[in-house]
Image 1: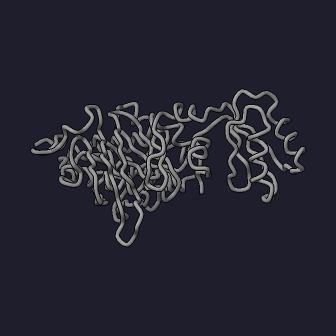
Image 2 (image 1 turned 45 degrees about the horizontal axis):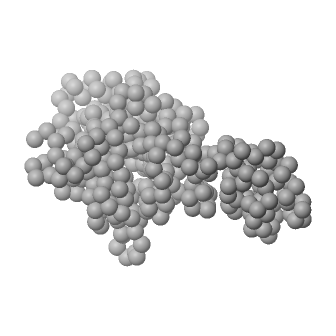
Image 3 (image 1 turned 120 degrees about the vertical axis):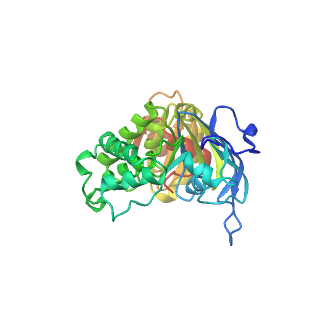
Length: 332
């Protein structure tokens, strides 16, 4: 049986034809808890796309990725990767996936090059093929000059690139990345984005989890916004931002005791306001088609003796989508 084929008797006929990843009512309830970390999640990820799971910490993103990569056993529901049931056939599933976890799992007893070489050998490559592939990947990921060095000598960004290189050494059908740029400096983050973009152009299917809205917007063909284990919205970044019904987002800062009152004032008295939501120490206002919005905001506040300390104006973002869906900031 090929590693990319579903084992005999598999229920691959239930999988959407062009879906590389497919879940059916996927649910995880951890022992000792009474809530679902992932609650009846239904997803299809198409071949060749970068698909993002976007949500705050604790939303269920890592648990979802864990179930799809055989590290977490679902409580109920189904999960398929490459047509393979990952619960029934975890060994077969591991042959068609590459995984980059949140933590650094590089072997510190090996050199940079050896981390790739021995990974290839573990997945059945001949010595010659593993050597050639390890050298190629180091060049592709801008690490060729680091090959003989210990992995401890790498910066955080370099180590993350090496983990991605290792994860695709055996040419997996699907690459999973769990918060791939968490903790990286901006330059290292951009370098990793560039690498992922190259893999995408080569046709690599990628699923990544992130709580960075800019990362999701920049990288993902489609994404699912999740919170408390539930799917809230699904679509391209442009489609999701269009659901806000706004073309401008105004963030207004005032004294905490006035924020709730300010929400009501802006919704009732300012032209074009679709929604006003209190987020931390500010009010986020979604506006459509209103001219001179800032003077209108100040005017409404003055009429009700509300002191505004700061105002900023921006286009709708995925953050706006999340606020509209949940009434809270993505970072909460």
